[in-house]
Amino acid sequence: MTARYFEDVNVDDELEPEEKLPTEDMAIDFFGRGNPTNPAFADAEAAKRMGIGGALVPGMLKISWVTKYVSDWAGTDGAVRSVRIAFRRPDVAGRPLILAGRVVDKREEDSRKLIDIEVAILAEGEPSVRGNVQVELPSRG
Image (spheres, one colour):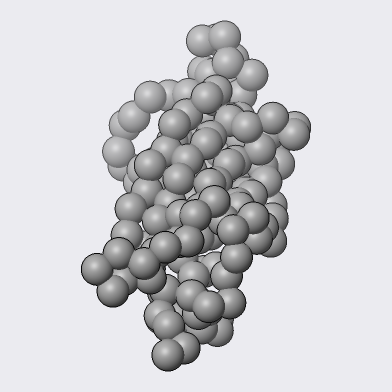
């Protein structure tokens, strides 16, 4: 990971998309194998009986992916300051998901260099998660 600087970022810059392929094991491992949660997170058959197409991908897991995705983009000296996420529809394990992002604002506040990024998790080209992440970047100055 390299450093990213405030001066090098422009509004409408797009983050490199990243693919994730969630598995049933990811859901189980995320919550802990000894932690009983909603069976739809760990058992595709239970999820199908509930009317869902397969094991659900936990929302908290998707939030962690978004946070890491933007943190990696921000680089070694950048810092995630806030994450706001809205879930639009459930995601099912075994189906590829794409993380995507775009810079929507760049400003200085109280000498802090802030970047606002609009993020989405796309399932079959449609957003299942939308959100905004604010990062603080260092200045070259």
